[in-house]
Image (spheres, one colour):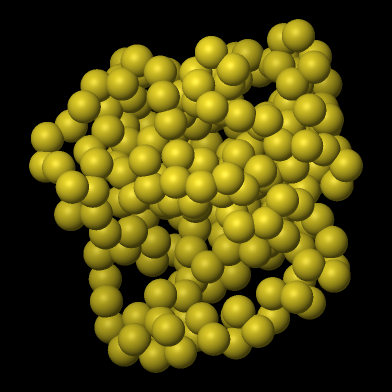
Length: 227
């Protein structure tokens, strides 16, 4: 997979975020090839110390935690390209976060049940944008309940705030899930390769950032858009 064959997007946020489930590591990136997510990527907001939440207490070790505790919750999610909104879903609740291994066990056991419930139980609140040629679609998932600022038929421009980061759907902590597809409906879509333009990348094995013109962030790399 190269940048020449990928749909090139802007990162859908400002500030520092960690890439997870990156297609630079493996394809299918999330381990399964369902709902158009073959090349999908996740981003978790972090601070300079790579922490997604500054506070730690007994809940961090043994239980669930309020979504509001996490750095990404409520942060603006930006349109990654110019296009037209062709689909959205709202109404899914934001779950509590789970950093505790004890809390993750019952969550993992419930994975099969969520799959049986269908797309919205997995993706949560979503916005899907048709790019300007109308043949490629980008979907952003796990958005905060009630935060979507656009409607179907709206024209959006790259960098426009369209929603907020949430923890809806199949999500253990607030993050932005992004994927590119060949159809607007993820239930019948195939995932397409993607890449991003103009960002700094701190790889997990380096303290110094690289400036990337076009590429895919590596697994657990920290990225920040370049203005």
